[in-house]
Image 1 (cartoon, rainbow, N blue to C red):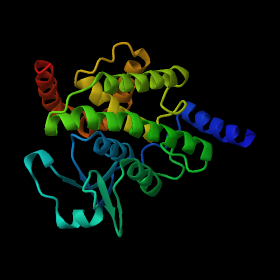
Image 2 (image 1 turned 120 degrees about the horizontal axis):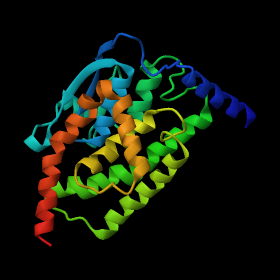
Image 3 (image 1 turned 180 degrees about the horizontal axis):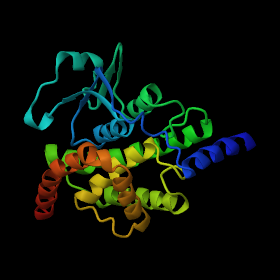
Length: 255
């Protein structure tokens, strides 16, 4: 326990004196052999784009627009039989879960002991994974139920589904009342996943005004991630917003 606390305090000391290992270098790293199949509308895909931005890593991006009826390339079907996005192809390996992708990118292409996912602190890693799972279970799934289903087949929200989101938001609000970021005092990949989710709810009419800590955290994310937040996250939200607003209006009229 003492050893873990020492490691964690060292990380915080490095952060306080201004030694940050979040970016790979002052110049972008280019690896065109790595391919990301994505869609800007997806929060999961945007979490990967935010990670790429933080690492200053340029890879080959292949956008797939399901709403326009674009067909999946054959190589994509072979990599992911579920036919979901995102998918990352790196050499002989393919990853089709966003949380696995963002952790892989930091470990494979970030500088050694990158603070986004510290490699030498199992406790801190586990806390990050815990928040990624929390986000996946509560926010990604809620987005699919409330919004994706609404776009594709007109499914209406239920009070129970909305209450589940508020319960999760309350939980994250409590977390931010104890720490500056999703995990402790430093920004990690957990913040990329959570901001991609929660900013989507915020931008599409879901009332977050009662969650003061979340509002402060959202602003901080935009400020700290300013160099890449617009292209990685805000662009997708702006494209998604009119679709979801239309769905919400249609659902309200049918009540």
